[in-house]
Amino acid sequence: MPRLVRSAVLNNYVEVAQSVGLDPYRMIAAHGLPPGCLRDPELRIPMTAVARLLEDSAARSGRSDFALNLAERRSLSNVGALALLVREQPTMRKALEALADYMHLHSDGLRLTIDEDDEGVAIIALAVDSESPVPIRQGVELALGFIHRSLQQLLGRSWRPQAVWFTHSPPARKDSHRRFFGTNVEFGQDCNAIVCLAADIDAPVPTSDPAMADHARRYLDLLAPRANATMRYNARECVQALLPSGLCSADRVAKHLGVDRRTLHRHLARDGETFLTLVDSVRSELAIRYVDNRERSLSSVAELLGFSALSAFSRWFRSRFGCSVSQWRNSLHWSGTAPLPNVVQTPASKR
Image (cartoon, rainbow, N blue to C red):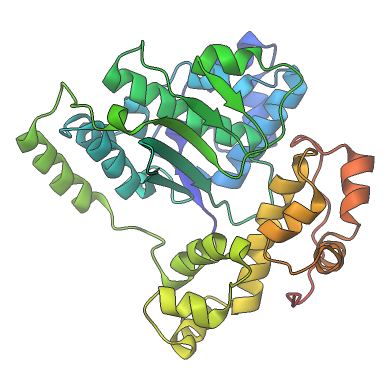
């Protein structure tokens, strides 16, 4: 089942596209999206189509900051009814936790986590699971830009994070990113995240109303359960987390999910999946993101994808994409806007 996102993700697309010389309606049609997605924010549309639309818009307009121009116009209201719950939380930490808990109502392919280290630094990380190997550079910048705008909406426009991290490679010019985030923006990182002081997210939210928060939570619980919270969905999340450790096995994933290996295989089989094809799918999606960053060594990419050696990664990449990873990087000058190579439909490769 494809990952879906509310069409509210395209709010203001018409204005931004026209401002850089694009025909928004022709662009929408070219990527197979219904015209109604520009009028009705509640339509559920494929994440992959939106990702390709944003990349194509950036490429055709020559504006690597296309998504940031969209994010400039974002506010909490972009997530619809979920904004009611977020605004009424007592602290920023609780607000972020509420956003993370109910993000699936806006998009079932986004995951937000909040971690804190011993030095009082908080990392608000965004993970994207499109279930397809599509370029997501612009999509990630739009999503992280939205979170940044939401934090400023609750904490005040003068608030600035300590840093902003992106996993993809840097653009030719970083001016737009520095201007938008008002802080140091670092590329080629291990995760997409906003880094701030833990004290910032423990700040009270002035608009907080516990009674309204309780009402909003009950309302959201009635809207829809987590649509894709199946064993397969949870297993994909677990695989993503375990791959870099080199310890991603069916037994370990099953243990994390609180079931035995046989139960995990049975649930995956119901969706026409095996554990190996699941791992192969996750690796394919992550591979195009990591390889895009020319500053990241191929040995590092291999390690992040859970391969024991670069040679194993190279063999897998060729079998999956039909060319060597070096050929892809060098001849296609992959930057998130070039056409994707054809995925070779072969059985999942073992390490």
